[in-house]
Amino acid sequence: MFLDKKQRILLENEILLDLWQQSKAGDSVAFCHLADKLYRTLFNYATSFTSDREYIKDAIQELLIHIWEKRQTINIQFVTIYFLKSLRNQLLQEFRRNKRPFLGIDEIEEITDNQTIETEIEESEAYSESQRRVKNAINELPKRQKEAIFLKFYEGLENEQIADLMQVNRQSVANLLFKAISTLKSQIPFISHWILILYTLIY
Amino acid sequence: MQDYRNIQPEELAVDHSFRLWKLSNDADAGNFWTNWLSENPDKQDVIDKASHLLDTVFQAFDDVSDDEVRDEIDRLSISLDQKTETSSAKRLIFRPEWYRAAASILVILGLGWWLTNKYSPAKQSNPLYNQIISQIKEPLLKAVNDTEQPKLVSLQDGSTVLLQPKSSISYPKSFTGEKREVFLSGEAFFEVAKNPEQPFYVYANNLVTKVLGTSFIISAFEGNKDVKVAVKTGKVSVFALTDENLETQQADNKLGGMILTPNQQIVFSPKDLRLTRSLIADPALLDLPIQKQSFNFKGTPIKDVFAALENSYGVKILFDAEIMKNCYLTASLSDEPLFEKVDLICRTINAQYEQLDASIIIYSKGCSYQNE
Image (tube, rainbow over the protein chains, first blue to last red):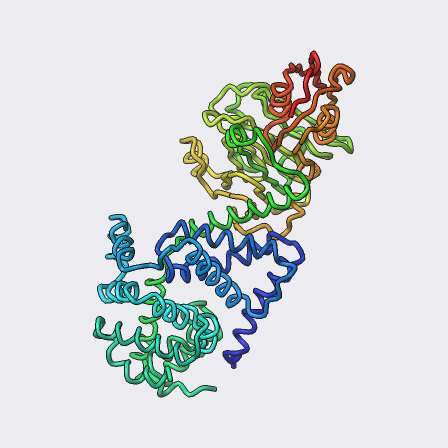
């Protein structure tokens, strides 16, 4: 029989922690390994905050280098959550400092417009119509709802962990998820029959 | 064990073991869910919906390509390297302009033994070697290093090879064809003069490394059946020596095959011509003395600069210490060929140089001011 959920998460975290310990000892290759493992998650998470891809890349570089430089003083328990949280703090700080607005509706339109014809063709081939609709719908969610959806369904985090990351209480996480799903439901028929049960799941 | 009979798709989509199966291809989880489905065939629909939801969420959020991730990790690794270097010496002045032009490559190939049959590369099992060698019109010269010290070999095109002990290299007297080709056994540090028109090839044990310029290290010792290539900075391409590969690779001057970027390494198994790429797990592989040698100078007396070069390259640099006592150098040199380094230094301090056998002679009228 396989390990239960908690054990599995601990095991995965164990692997990342191992890389982190090596990094801490000064092994920059191990640190690059670790960064490689986390990169996709970090990048995709950041898209909940801004649509500027180059900005995201720079922010992540800055974060990783900062963590590397401060590695001696950092104690980490759950690696992924630590990195997500640091990235979130950094982005929010920079937004505040530069008065840079969060992703707005206009910017979302922009991303869609900027997609090259090639990717559009690829997409229309690879993705079904319903998947594209969900994608658009998710992208149009308010940023905090999008963030919650990311953490719940992409990262598979518990509501409690999401609450900790987003610095809100569990009830707010449940509300965010509920609103997000409701919006998605109204736009995407095939989700609609889940919604009642989801309500019970979230609370 | 959780009872999944009454589970809903969106619950399933966040269920850990379900995610392990769908997202990580976990074998245990896969077995479990296949079994579960065969016991609960009516739940296929729930599984499909949950998979669909996961796919959709991943597509909605996945916004970065593999190449982008790799580039960013490369960028990180370069920054970390520089952080380590610059902690001791500051990186300075005339770097930007020519550093980019000379942007270079450090590669280590831990190679097999194909040329260890020292005096006859022609005895190779792969008939392609004979073909390649027969196409080289110039007679091949051979340098062997039987000493305990690295030995400098200069090639006609200005490239230099720092041949490590127990190593040998075969090379044409001059590079007349469209390619520059050398054959190595053992270990060597290459600094290849940049010439995109005439790519540089290193052959060893059925593995070919192709470079358009710059520097790298190769080691090919007997008994080491697997070939290792590790890149410190820059880019090279690596491919197995087969007819097909040779044709496509030599057709153009682009880097094809498997591209290696910093801190990646390749392990090549000559038996099945299989290449495996990974990050460098063992940084010691790149730990040659020449790399530890820092070429960052800040107001450094010229005699110390020359001493550093002498140490790293095993060459003798002759100069008049008295005349040049007022010459100081501020520069950050990297992995350009030795003579390019010497040339840059000479230009900076207004001197000339001449190469004579394994010695370099510096002509200078002295420096009337302190070169900052």
